[in-house]
Amino acid sequence: GKMDVQCPSCHALHWAAEKLSKSSISHPMFGTCCKSGKVELPMLQNPPQELQHLFDGTDYESKHFLDNIRSYNSAFAFVSLGLKVQPHNDPNLPTTGPRQYKIKGALWHAMGSLLPETGKDPVYAQLYIVAPETALEQRLANNA
Image 1 (cartoon, rainbow, N blue to C red):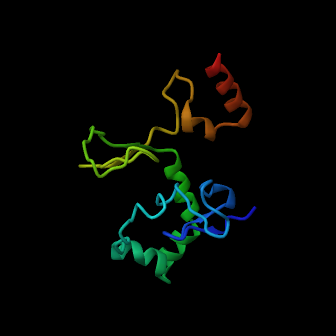
Image 2 (cartoon, rainbow, N blue to C red):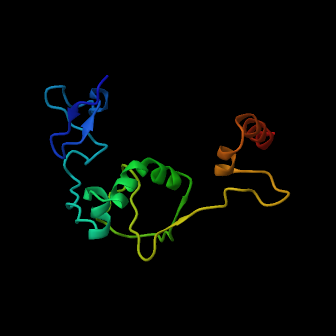
Image 3 (cartoon, helix red, strand yellow):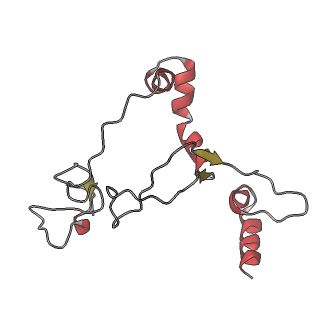
């Protein structure tokens, strides 16, 4: 089906099957987006002017960025999010629902080499740049 049922609190789109069982189709409530209005996020700030220009500009650099945005996004699909998680005792963060973290300090992306070290088998993203048969053989060997 279509994802066309709007949360009355935050206006996120959902499938009808995602509504809470205690709600009806005519008055749906959802717990996965804003916990039925209990979570409110502030409006996003405007991005830096240089980044906004890449989206709104009409010059070559902007056109190149928009033409290749999926490639840029894919490049980050193979990175790991790095941060130091410290236990928190914040009573304002809910204990149910999706995990929430407060991040203090630096947040970084860790990206490994696209080529395996000499004498080592390819792993993770390295398997995506070899022939499909080779990748399958390596995955099967990793499971042995």
